[in-house]
Image (tube, rainbow, N blue to C red; front, side, top):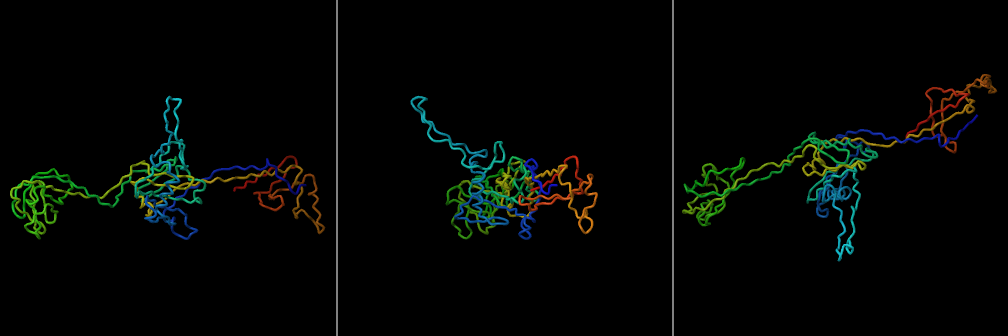
Length: 420
């Protein structure tokens, strides 16, 4: 009978296997609840500004400087892509010619890229980095406790306001899933000017200029400027009569571009006879509109570093500030983790563990065993397997689903699997 049995190296097999788990986190799970309930996703806005003069901060869960977010992302992931989205040109040596080709001398060394930018593919990389003053990037940071060893390629989706959705292409690039248009809220003014001849002075409230004019749609008259001799201007300030002015605005003044008639209600401006000076008048119109920006379907909008859990949006047509501050966002991805399964092969030979210490086999006050136990046909049953260290300390216990009889003629093998 053997009380203990040592494992051989061949009895222990370690098998690694990769497991994945998908997550979908709306913003409500990013920043609400107690610290142990927070999933830990964070967002940062990086801005190309001087940190010494502008210490603007950013962050959903933690606070960082916008300038440092921009500089850190550039240094880690884009330092070799500042002049080209496919990589900066490598500096080459310069040939200093000699008297013949054999005398040519190479001056300077070949400079390869200085930093590893954690490229996620062996294909030609595509990384755009905005370098203009005050240009911005948005950074999504996923903690390692969620993504494990890396984010599974093709699994990342970032949804903003249900109208913009970015996905990864499996090669470290982020693309827009559909066309996306948004209003910046900024008003842009467009101006149109045209010079017309002065025709007639009709009255202090009306003059006639050249017409008609092919005016673009949506433009409104805002000013007029006399281009002739200054003392002969037909415009005067009602508060300063007798002193012509060259420029007037549209306060109380209208101009009909079809008839050429300009009128005033004399609340600010009045008209005088220019005494025959045919000098032209420069008329200016203005049109205002709210600036919209458009991101096309399948347009590159940034990059993702799977092994770092970092997604960076660099497309300047995106509402980057809103992406890092608004609450109507959802982030989805799959994590990856390698689990190691250790298999222990417990082999019981036909002449091992053939006696039982189960007290139910004892009879009488003397502790004698029942007669059938000593029979050659008796075979004990295995119900539990214990694993011990070299000091015979019990480390693990394995229970069989049902008692297993040992064989008196062949080996009995029990496999124990432990995941770690």
